[in-house]
Length: 342
Image (cartoon, rainbow, N blue to C red; front, side, top):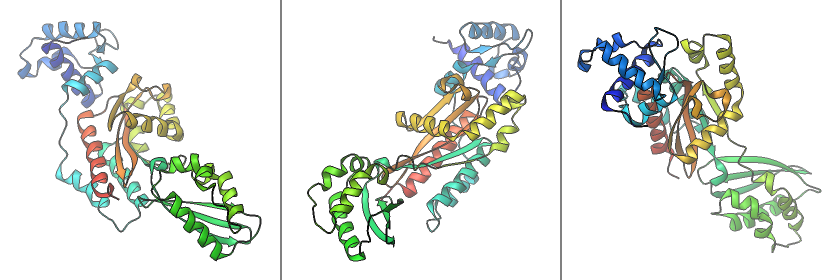
């Protein structure tokens, strides 16, 4: 439903004032802003129209107005001007990202802390999804007479280790030969394709030295090359959420704690959103998971080599979208700039 210029102006004022104050916004408060040059009576008339159209609501008689999901959505899409991050804020993000000598996982943990600190919301980072990664190499290491360690590396440098039990001991020389054969066959392939096609890829390798192990690998390919479950989630900032005026009652507090504890929901929603768009803002009722409809979620994808990860913030629907969109975008862009090359 289209809005008039005046309705957009009043809606923007309601959203911004409610975000800042956490209290319903009155016509008198808006009228006191001289730049609008409108009387309280005119503003009340516009508010009534916005309420009828489903953009705002009045929590109780004689109270001011509060944005609904549609009001926030219109603000984010059409009315909001993104806030520019300060040089200090940018520096806080850039400094840990540029510590190339540090482990990438440790860098992600620090970035999560900074996201939470700068946003005063729940900061979340998902490690890259490795399913679309490109196979680089495999190493086979004998651990005992009946156990070998399989070390898989993808081109971005991330790796996975799996222990495999075997019927009889295989010499180091034979393991080296097998890994050489597999590296020749699998090099340059996507992990997901290897997992689904492994038996076909190695079916013509029938050397007496390795056919038993190849058959075992074929049987275990689903597990060996299953990088889909290797997503880890870093989150910080629970204490910021618990301090919000939006979550003062017991029911709201319970929803916050359930959100933090149920990682699967967050992982699924964040991955789903960034598959649709590099930057996503989901507000309240737009989130399909009912337990999260008291929240909003801003996410963006970043690249590590040739694989994608996701980062973002989660907080109450009354969040500073103009700043947090800029914060999430800049953080994702910075990680991609530094680590997005093989």
